[in-house]
Image (cartoon, rainbow, N blue to C red):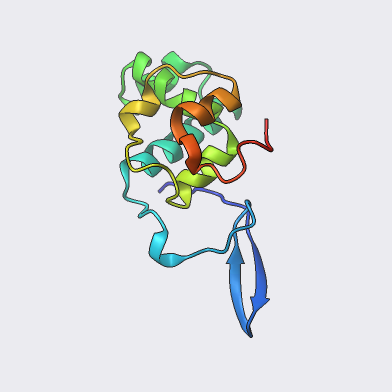
Length: 133
């Protein structure tokens, strides 16, 4: 089982409770990305693997890759997803990433600088990319 944590709050709007996402937008169930989507599964896997390394359950990427039955290079590429800008991750989880963005794109080398990531992956789709980073 994979768990993805997304911080959110609830706000009463028009007499109904609505979910407010971290970027301030209201949750819309019609636009959410199914958990089965490859891009969401890859993000969840990346953060789970990072947690396994940080907790000491696995001492190295080599050990993690062996335990997960994947190639070390693949494990490294997936783990790199944890370096994505938080707003890019939020956009993906909320289904607001550009349609052209794929897991394959994210597994290629990408800039560490968050502003460069936003330009490369999100273009104009990032809600507040000029104000962050």
